[in-house]
Image (cartoon, rainbow, N blue to C red; front, side, top):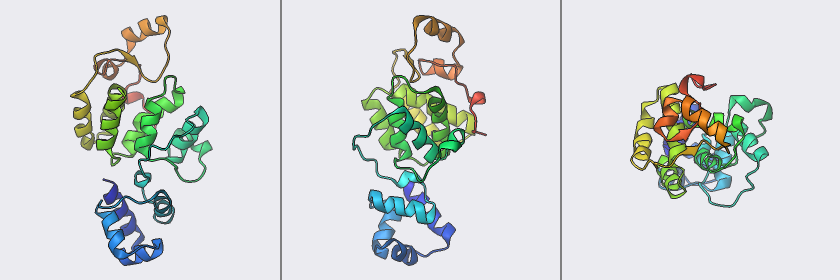
Length: 219
């Protein structure tokens, strides 16, 4: 949960709620509401919390403000979220909540392969992201199979039982229509992947050879 992430970040620093509130320029009552999930920090306050307390970027607002989603943006943002595969691109703090980034990437028709491979890692790295929002948004955009595939890979590779709940919610609304995993495929590629796709991709009606034991940077 995002509020638990904030509380743990404060405790790692050794600050009381009052000390943290003073540092952030808010009242102790408001900071308490942040930690209890009764208030959502503004973008500026979230960035300040991330910078000062090394808090999780899951605190960033789930804004629907339009973004220029380019190949460069997705690679650099995934790097900012800590993906080791793009460590050479890392510059500053993340600008987008991991849940929103995941939704943006899954919606791409032809995602760069290295970014696509990093999406299960993102689920593994941020299991506290707002899955209620993410699952709802994925369903509304018919992306539940792609998201479910990421969650299944992350759960199996990382052994995180907390991912079973969103995984089951996505299974309950799984689409029967065949899809690729964020890639445009020609017919020979489709035929090959139908024969060689991973068990997890088959379960989610996807054409992909990604499998849990092939994920880099997930123990």
